[in-house]
Image (cartoon, rainbow, N blue to C red):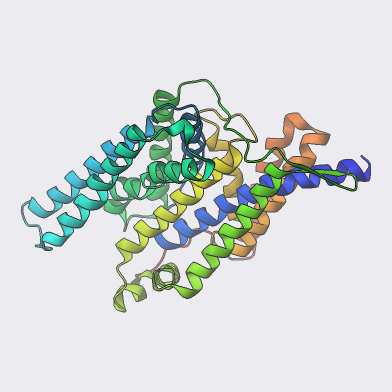
Length: 351
């Protein structure tokens, strides 16, 4: 391997690692706030990418039907929560807010997908519509599957996450079919920088990833909602004592994870052909980065995910058949080191 090949591989590794870093940050965020290891984060990637493909083909996205169905299920859950025997009265605003979020907004998205000329939309509009369709699915899954078990152990929440992953996998096969697809590239530009040939697509992925992380950092440090999420992540009991609604923090964390996952799919869609089941492996690579960060540190998780991308790129040159094995093998020494250093990854919070 000469220097030019090494630089090209580094460029590929940084590009893919930037996407893994976004997923790692999303996983750490959800785990810190809710103790859920959000394995279906990978499915959010494929849902985002394949929904974007449908929009660019001018086809009505089948994920809209899933959004409508899940919104209706969440609203029925809220109605049952108010009307069931022994339920504490919570006021009409609860059902009103639930109707707006889970019924009205999905219907608006449905009408937009039906009435707009999907294929003629420009790229930002297609990306925005994709996010509006896919991202709300994450907090809806939280409401249906995880919120009723909010006080269960991490192991129980992990089992539920695995179940949600398999359900989303089956729904993905039904909605997108078994054939793979790739979305249109953001840019056809190419730049020559010494021995490197930089593509506009790769630069767009890196710049978008950096901007998203900067926006998240600003959100956590400046906004009240971001500070509430940080407080919940540090101590849920203490957050409740100071008036923070932990349930809403969980919904917000899942919404951010859904946005990150769907946007990651939009970013990675033009670079590789994605199938309905491709998201699991992509999500696992983000999970390796999150593990490197101990599921608590955003910067270390992002740096770990970049390392995963670089390792995958160089492994694909030396032993392409074993690149995934080498990446996932990273988990073993990291978990062993965490165990011997006395820092447990899945400590249960004592409340």
